[in-house]
Image (cartoon, rainbow, N blue to C red; front, side):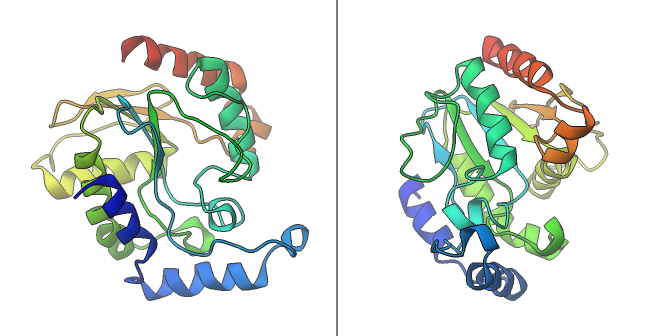
Length: 223
């Protein structure tokens, strides 16, 4: 399946009732500051350079970010922080990600999520993740030049590991998470961990621009 066909099938997916109901509920009720906007309210596809060597994986779209704008890490505070860092490290053409028509271009980077719909309280069920792994699997297979996966946050990292446990026999292998953690996956891709660029992590100092840019530049050098 080509990436374009895959993305069309992702956008029309209605397999998980709980996720469908939640994403559409948010799209109707909206946040006060976005009352005049039309929310996307559908599954979110990945986007970026189809020949990229780096795949960056978040857990799921944000309720009033991706679920509103139709693009992952777009239009929320996590995106504001992340794209300032990606721009400084040379992975994109501008330091902002506001909407799907903002002119953003990713360089040697494809950005996606393990779960394609926003989950209640940012907590997907194991069944929802396993259901969505079919899309994630096809996505990885379609991006034929990917050599490195950078997972944002421990939950996103664990989701990537669980995906590989589903498709490969690695049940007894430990993949420890940390900012900058480095593991070789069974298909010879490299899995690197990163603290999530959430406002909470940024405000508490767990992650800052210097730490994130330093990691991104290190990853870029090794690609």
